[in-house]
Length: 423
Picture 1: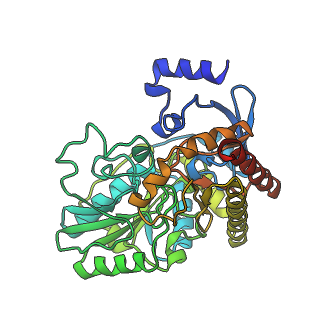
Picture 2 (picture 1 turned 90 degrees about the horizontal axis):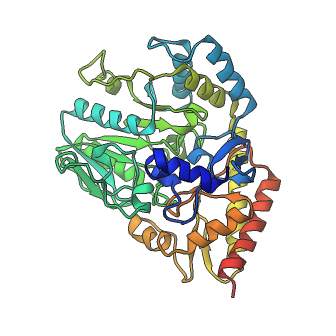
Picture 3 (picture 1 turned 30 degrees about the horizontal axis):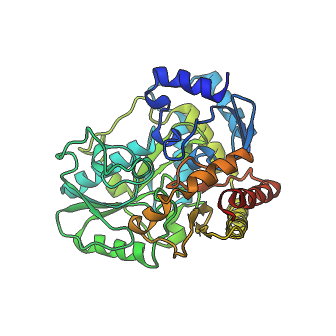
């Protein structure tokens, strides 16, 4: 079957033919390719076409797809059992590795997704402070829980939605939004401020110098808790995530993606004092039948055990080389291009007019919505390079991407830009 035939089949039984709107190709047009396998830096679709993959499950695959050590760990655990609804050694081992690597993290609770992690962290913050209101930033995406969908990035922005139908006014009544990179003035009604340390769901927007530090100070001033949503930055910016990268310690951390080694997982954590509010120790209830799933913890433990500080240095160097190479190659077609980076995170903005790197969703939106990414995306896809099918997403490089992969991608970017933008 072709990609088109498979997608037609999917649309009969799955709304829109996809299980996550960001996969739909709605904003870039065309038919999604249906992936049947992946190895390292590559994925292969149902038609047998192989792509250099820069989606990498939106950042989950730090080592690349189907890494031999990860697959071996999953197989070993699968033979012992896949879920028990009881404590397992694997959840302890993964939690120990996380606590060991993140300086301010003392305890974690494992869940099944990033959405669940942030939702639960917000509940803990409300329970710990006895307050109701939370602050989030425009363009930051924290999963699809009701209270946090307002003014979200990623697929919410991609589809041009202010939030979501089905979310009641009451559900977001205690959510306050603020512009990213501007420190809001808080008061004693605020339980928590939740933020992406690097905004990676409105394309890539870096925090201004001292933004996170000043946000930490403002939370301390009124007794609010600071929550870092590190579903993307966690164990990707550095071995300890955003905290050592920016030298700012939050009260609560939320993780996902990398810590599951490619399997569904999430986690939230903080100090023992804050986490003591969580049941069964305290009155804040949270539970999950598949929380701490043995397969996911086996995969995640393997990833965190395997990566070294040198690996992060190498990954960051690869990203910097790709960023400079793509920028120069695309700009040679006569358009303006920016490829901002933060550690191993990489963004891509295209414009026919000169611009400065965005610092907020207000500045990012015109660049993401100018229609140029759509044509560039398909030109890259025709050359065997798979970027995310949406201009609000970022480019994920894995440790499996070789120098040859980077070189091929830069070459393809120059050719694609000349094809669609050259005069």
